[in-house]
Amino acid sequence: MAGHRIFGTPFAAIHPHYVAKAERKGRTRAEVDEVIRWLTGYDEAGLQAALDDEVTLEAFFADAPAMNPNATLITGLICGIRVEEIDDPLMQRIRYMDKLVDEVGRGKKMESILRVPKG
Image 1 (spheres, one colour):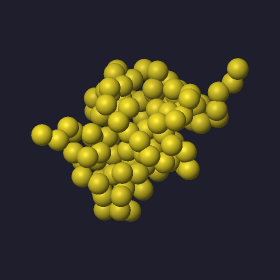
Image 2: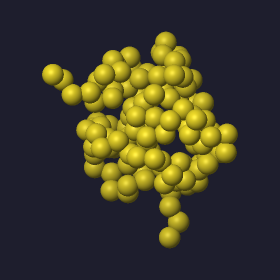
Image 3: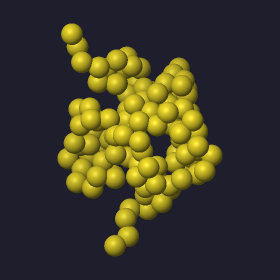
């Protein structure tokens, strides 16, 4: 059974769009990369390797060192769909990443985006 066509899209093809979206709102590539690393567990070198190797989104998430356990705290709408209600685990991870980048672009504080516990 074939997955959604986005699964075969290279991560390197969408990353520049994430960065451009953030930069239009006065944010930086470093902030975009920080939230992606938080979500996936990649370090800077691993993230850059995924970009350089043009891995698909499916491979990007399959090879992610460690999905952040707090990713389940990411809620809300993305493309009109509640991310917490997405059944397909890969699509949900992609939408988590979209949501985090949206939050960067909206100017939310990094502590809030990274779901840092209050206390």
